[in-house]
Image (tube, rainbow, N blue to C red; front, side):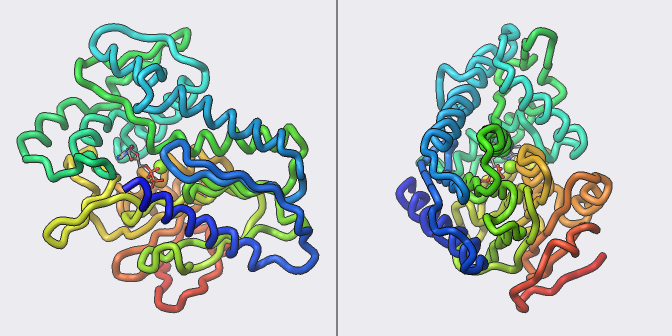
Length: 346
Ligand code: ADP
Ligand code: MG
């Protein structure tokens, strides 16, 4: 399973690189510096286009390590594991990184009315999607675990103290931590005077600055039906985060039904709607990551309403019936490249 994932991500990384470099002209310097690794549960690639300094890239990867060690649910000593171990028992003190991400997570939960749900952990564990024990749980099990899910019971107190107020509650920052990591990576790059770089955390893209020749970046939006092969269109912009969530990332299939890794906290099942993919364009990747998960669950109608009410983000929905739904401000930045899809202007 892991092997298959790594291969997918490798192919994906190559496509992204080709998409980006394929659109550049011969003014672009060839001396780029790139490093990759499997971390934060995904395949991570950072490429500097105007610097050759390995120290800068190492600083970024050290920061990724730090973030993973504080936020992973799979690392026993992480702050998130400590919060979970003490659910219904006592508040625990967490690092500023974790406190900040939890504040954002709660904010996204509030604006999406629980479509983004940081306490989704019990259901993620129950379904086990992407793990060796993935299975369809019984309705009884789902009902029982739904009772443990409520972001209102995630208490953020003074002095970085955090408490899950019911026993059995489980925080899961898998839907937001990569976005924070991308923002922190960008910060390090800017501190080190990098003005042209791509941070790619398994398809969470942060295009830093502009292309080395000063042109805007061109970022391919993946066609969910030709995974890792083709784009529906290109986003053209500078200094922008583009985060995509799709039902083709992690899933299993049984009796013709696809069970994927984004869970609807209202039903306890993987979100079932017309969405095949959702991309969020934003200035910070933490918004893109948290909200792409929320938009996936909300579906096109509710999602577009929310997106159009938020100034800082734009979105592109790709639906199963091959339509593209764009939020108000996307049109200037998005160029359709695949005629199989039809743009709908609501
Ligand atoms: P990907 O980049 O793989 O699409 P996402 O950012 O969309 O991942 O987040 C998926 C992960 O978020 C899941 O693996 C799980 O850990 C967690 N998750 C699942 N459902 C939700 C939800 N409704 N709200 C918040 N996090 C979720
Ligand atoms: Mg997300």
